[in-house]
Length: 277
Image 1 (cartoon, helix red, strand yellow):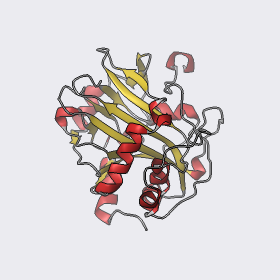
Image 2: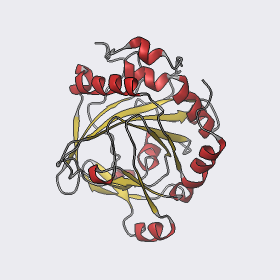
Image 3: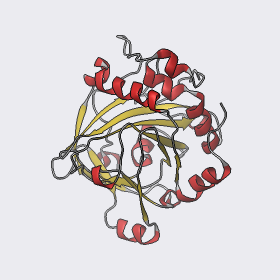
C-alpha cells in the first residue's frame, strides 16, 4: 500500500512538525499488538523504569531491530514504511521501537525534549528521522498524552541539559521563549490512531494521575542515507524487509524468538552531556 497520508496531512507535518493518521491500525490489530506488549516474555523481561523529577516511573522497553514478531511486522508493514519514506523524502530503515507504559496514578512525566537531542549522539548527522506513536489505549490530557510545541521542529537542534540520570531536557532557560512562538498542542488519540512527529519536534507529557493506563508503541525510522557515522549504538542501517499490510493478521499473536532478533536494550540511551561537551 502506498503512503497513507493525503496532501493536507503531509503539509501539516511539514508546517507543524507532526500530523495524525487516525485509525492507522484496526481494532483487531491493536488487540494483537497490545497482547504482545502485555504477554511477550522478551518484552516483559526488558522493561526498564525511567523516573521523572518527582520519582514517578514510566515503564519502557526498547528494541533496535524489526523482526518477525507481530510488533516487528508492524514496523515493517507497507503503510508504516511507505508513509515514513514519503514524509522523510527517501528510503528508510527501522531505527528503534519502544513501548511506553504509563500506569494509572503512578506513570511519570517526560520533560521538554527533542528526540534528535538524543539521537544526534548516536551518530545521525541530519535530523532525517521521525516517530510513529501508535495508541494502544485511549490517550488524552487526563492520562498524560503527548504535548508538542507546534512548529518547533523548524528551530533546529536545541541544546539539552541533564535533568536526571534517565532524562535530558531542552535548555530550560530557552523554553519560555520557544513556547511563546510555538503554541502547545495536546495530541489526544484513540486506540489505533497514530501520531507521526519529526525528530526535532519539542515534546513532553504529564504524569498519569488518572485511573486509566496510557500505553503507546513508538516506531522510529531513519533515512537510509542518514545512516549513523558510528556503529557502537546498535542503531545503524540494517536493510528493512518490508511486508504487506496483511502480515500482522496472518502472524497472529507472534512473540519475539529466543535469539533476541529484535535486539532488546538492557538500559535506556541517555547521552552524558557533560562528557559530550
